[in-house]
Image (cartoon, rainbow, N blue to C red):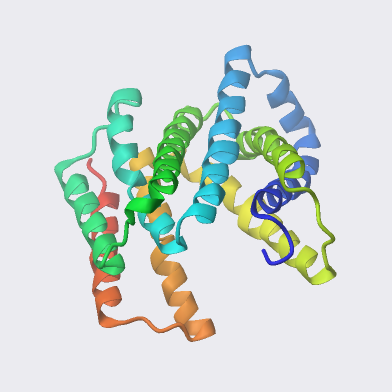
Length: 264
């Protein structure tokens, strides 16, 4: 990030991930699946690419340029509530009472972790951008669930097509607005790691899970990244975790577990 502007960085990350996945779609099985896609299927996959990559990632990077990272992370963790409400109307996925309790506990845990919450009035533009980002993030989760739960598309095809569309738009915007700086070998290798492991593999796995998990269940699991990052930062780079943050994480974990408890 010290060498590459944020939007260009995101575009490069996702375009590299797309290039890494593309050769795997050239087998007879996946080529046949692509040929069977109807016009409505293409509309959904292209829309997912624009929502999930261009808008969601774009607003997050823009939000980070206007707000502290802590504030951005806090606002993003309200995504599961928006997903739950949208899922009721658009997917007919109605959370159980236990899942609503779990979601409430999750949000309480997140607020405890971030307390005291700092939302400065002079940064309302940034907050507005992040509200749009949360809506885009939630919309992409619901659309992704709608596409994947039918089982008609392999997770690889969903990832490659949507990521290809979203990454091209994002990289084009980044190059036009921020340009392409000189990139050192170390930064390129880090970028390649992010593209292969954290993007190509992780996003294909994400689409696979959306076959069986509801949009709300997936969104809550995605939100636990905050906890994972805090623990990993404590283990590997000695970033301390105070008692308030530990209590917040424990409450959020309990809430996340409640959401995953399936009904028969």
